[in-house]
Length: 53
Image (cartoon, rainbow, N blue to C red; front, side, top):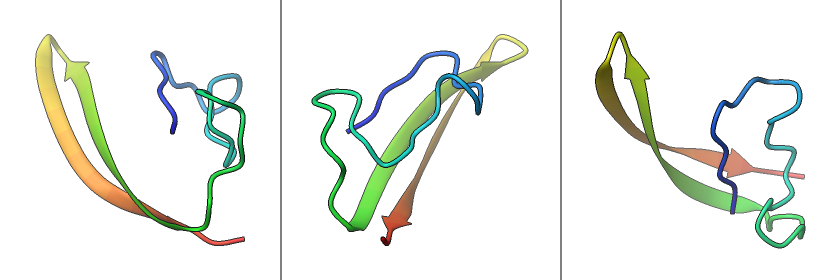
């Protein structure tokens, strides 16, 4: 669906389109898995987003 390194809320942002194939994502519930580092410690977060158009 969408993958980005250095997400910045302006040039690297999810707008409903897949950056894998360019298609608009279908409405529904999507689950995510994030890995990021804070002060050299890797943090893993999971959750979900609901897309409604």
